[in-house]
Image 1 (cartoon, helix red, strand yellow):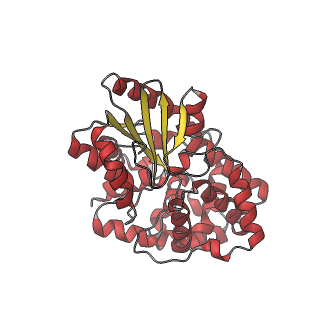
Image 2: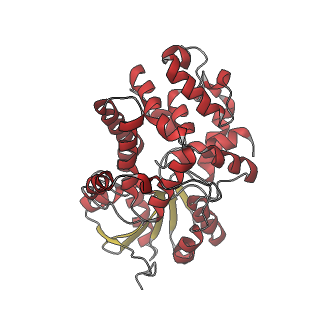
Image 3: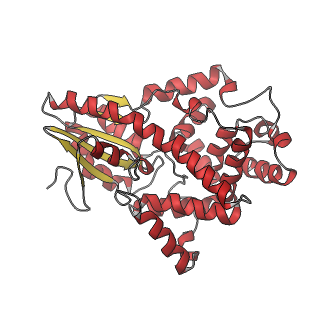
Length: 347
């Protein structure tokens, strides 16, 4: 896999909002180590969010129908069960919508190759100049474990550092060796292409480069510091969050990240809360809002042909007051979960 292609794939995957791990990477579920009171507090915080449970949903408005699939961007054998359930629906769909299709991933990789400054800052102060010696030592150690020497990582843009910190070293090795992520998004795309179903992107290929506009220099460094705890025990962290995904309790992932940052990042609770707010606004909420128009337009077009559409995106985009499900509901769509064991068409 070419380096630029590899970097583009990782950027797209990381925008799901989930840390990632390969199925063969070994770690422990950190929820097992939480005191009962902390676990209860996480579950209580999760229950406050609309649509906090479930990966598969159906939205209907008149004769228009949308099947929504919360995805995990890297390989896992459990994806086979999902594809067995929803593959036939993809085959019959008027269109498949995903965060980034093959065209967008190629444009992103080509752009990085043509302009390395998109992810590297060769002119401004280096990260060791912007961070305390202790924080920089922790950072370059974590990035070196991901195959990036300090001389390279010192010039990375903070948003890209945060992307890399969210990825398990084991996962990086697996993707490098296999040449692909094998994630659910790619499996949906492959199925659509085989069936001759059009694949459309929910957002432009260069969205990532504008997501972090407006952050102050201090907020950029705090973003890195907030991401550091998970990087230090990445395989355990990724396994924990992967299991939360497959238990269909995706917002629990978000609340766990907050709790872990409180305990291990060195930031105050107010600073962590600010980072969580910024991350949710920039990585999740703003993008969700921008996706509703393309989803509704594609559904209306498909309905004219007597078909529905399938939409797949990172699972953390489903729940919440600014989640895709709430936004569709506010726009007049009826939302129903597709329950375990239920056929994709409701049977």
